[in-house]
Image (tube, rainbow, N blue to C red; front, side):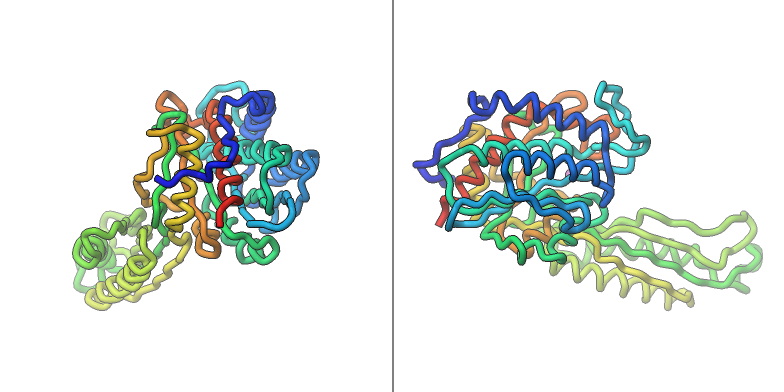
Amino acid sequence: MRPLRSDLVILSPHAPELAPLIPELEAFRRDLHAHPETAYQEQRTAGRVAERLAAWGLEVHRGLAGTGVVGVLRRGAGRRIGLRADLDALAMAEANDLPHRSRHPGRMHACGHDGHTAMLLGAARLLAARPEWRGTLYFVFQPAEENEAGGRRMVEEGLFDRFPMDAIFGLHNWPGLPLGEGGVRSGAVMASADFFHVELVGRGAHAAYPHRGRDPIVAAAALVQALQGLVSRETGPLDAAVVSVTRLDAGDSLNVIPERARLAGTVRALDEGVRTALEVGVRRVAEGIAAGHRMGLEFAYERRYRTTVNDPHQAALMLAAMAATLGAGKAHDDLPPTLGAEDFGWMLAACPGAYGVLGNGTEGRFAAGLHNPRYEFNDALIPYGVAFWVNLAEGALGEG
Ligand code: NI
């Protein structure tokens, strides 16, 4: 592992300069947790973030992708580094009964974006006060990470034109990974996530006279089976991919062959070439099965989230910042990729950078999976996350 530059003053998660900030960040995080806002509705959240950034002397830009916020710190010439957090909550009910539980029925911070926002704010606060660094830092608070691709919209609305960056970094808490540990990897880290919708249009008939109709249920069954071959027979055994049919419905009566059958599902891949081959394959198989069964076909394919791919150089830098912050043996370079998706992929497609994780703990609600109604962001992670961001920012500014 390559170290950070030796002249950097590494900030410890236990440093006295960090301690007074922690209660404020915890309170901030819990307030966001109690008032979760979903995709592009993050008005209150964005307002609170912008207000803090401005109070600490940062230049604040609002309105990118609707509720996005960018805070800027400039200190003369030098590198330009972006640090990114996500603002949004999920449309689900919270099952925890905590004093700061969600006040908004059917909305919950079940992915820890409340904590991500608090940690990046803390880093902005400390970096505004630390004298060592030179260059420009962009603190990017993006809306709508879940489902609605707020990161993509920020890029499309000119994030990197308005705020040119040499590198950008993203971070997620990771339930089940011990507190005080972190991980990153070079290359693909999160998958693409696409969706397909198929409607097979046959001809309805009395169930006792199947030869007078065209049965879309038999065709749908054949299609579900045939789609399995795309991963098992057409994708390289060492390439990760998923094709899952997640919805199948047809028919209302026990003695009627229905007119239509509907299927839908998702396609995941860690490589854009594999992703495109699967898109072509799903369409080809659906067309072939429909033709073979004399079905009409309505087909829609939605390319939704792209792959999230870490730049090797920036991933090594992130690993070095993790090791400097957490200690030897606590920063893992072999974070396994997952076939979950993350919209930071669009930022990484437009700018070199890396996406890594810090452990949220191994017990109780801190180990409950992301998007679980009993999950919670672990406030004990805040000092680790803040220190990591500070060390990564100063490390990245000092490169090259
Ligand atoms: Ni998340």
